[in-house]
Amino acid sequence: MRRLFGLFLFTTMMICSPAARAEQTELDPAKVSDSLKAIFQFGSAKTKQSLNANTVTLISGTIGGTYVQFGADLASVLDDGNKLRILPIVGRGSVQSVADILFLQGVDLGIVRSDTLDYLERKGFAKDIKKQFTYVTKLYNEEMHVIASKSIHNLRELEGKTVSVDLPNGGTFVTALTVFERLGMKPKVVYIEQRIALEKLKAGEIDAVIVCGGKPYKSVSGFKDDRFHLVTVDYDKPLQGDYLPASLSAKDYPNLISGEERVDTIAVPAVLAAYNWGANTERYQKLATFVDAFFTKFPTFQNPPFHPKWREVSLSAPLQGWQRLPVAQQWLDRHGVEAVTRSRFDEFLKQAPAAAKLQTDADKETLFKQFKVWEAEKARAQMRGGDKR
Image 1 (cartoon, rainbow, N blue to C red):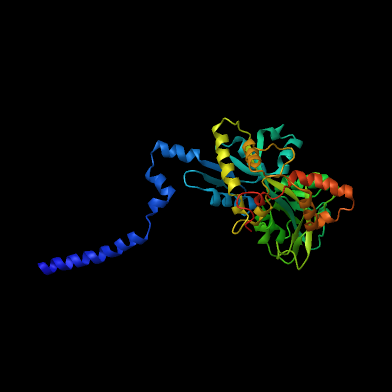
Image 2 (image 1 turned 120 degrees about the vertical axis):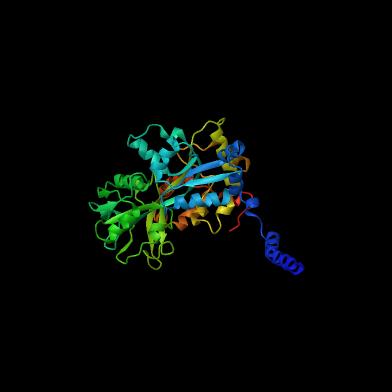
C-alpha cells in the first residue's frame, strides 16, 4: 500500500512540475490582453462605456490601397489598451468616405482626396459641403497611374479610347474626370473595379486603366505584362490649379518602368478628415484624444515597417479651402510646428522633373503659391524625438 501511495505521489509530481515551471516562465494571457479583460468583464456597464468612449473609428479605402495600409499603421501605433483604440474600416473610396463621415453613425475620421469635395460642389451634388468638414492633417500626395499599351505614350493619346476609372464611389474617377475635363478630352469612360479592369486590359477589352493612389500602389505593383507600361501625364497649365507635378520610377514599379526611366505624372493630396463637431461634444473630445496621441507619436510612422508614404506627411501643411480641426491647430501652435519654407520648395523643384521643366520665374512662383498651400516643412524634425530615420 505504501508503495502504491509513493508511486501515486511521484506520478503527480511529474505531471505538475512542467505546469509549475510553465507558470513561472509564461505570463497568463488574461493578465496582459485588454481584449480578454474586456470579455471577462462582459456585462459591466463601466467596461462597455469605456470601450466606446475611447474607440475612434476610421473609414479607410479599398483592399490593396494606400488608405487601408495607413489605417492599419494608425491602429498598430496608437492602440493603447482601453485608453485609445483605433478601429479602421475597409471603405469604398473617397466619395463613399465623404458620405460615411457625414451620415454613418459612429464614424469619427476618414481618408479622402482633396479634390473630391470640390467635385461634389462643382457638379451640384452638394452645397457648402466644406463647411461640414475639418481636417486633422494633409497626409501625402497621391499619384495618377495610367496603365496602357506601350503604343500609348501620353495621356492625351487616350482620346476616344476606352478607359477604366474605377468604381463611381471612389476617388480615382473624380480625379480622372476632372483631368479629362480640364484637358478637353473625351475618352469612353467605364467604371470597373481596378483588379478586374487590369484583367480586362490584358484581354484587350479596354485600352487603359487609371489608378490614383500613393506609390507604390499594391495593385499596380503586382501588375506584370510586358505589353503594357505607365503612361506620361504632362503637368499642363489647365491642371496646375488643382494638382502638383510628380514622377514614377523603376524603383516604384520595376514591372512597368525600365532602367533609369522616369514617368512624369500629377498628384493630388489625400486628407485625414473629420466632421465639424462642436468643441463641447463628446465626439470632438474623442478627436482631441486621437490628435494628441497621433501628433505625439508621429515620428514613429516615418520609419520602417510603416508605409513609405508616411515620410511625405507634414502635420503643419495648410490645405486651401479647408478648415483645420481646432484642437489640431492648437496642438501645432503649442509645439511650435511651423509651415512651409522657400528652401523646401527649392528642394522639391530639384526632385520633381516635371516641375523643373517650368520655363519662367512666373510659372515657378505660381507653383510655389500652390505648394505653400499643400506642403509644409516636415514636422518630425521639430517635434519630440527629432529625426529618427
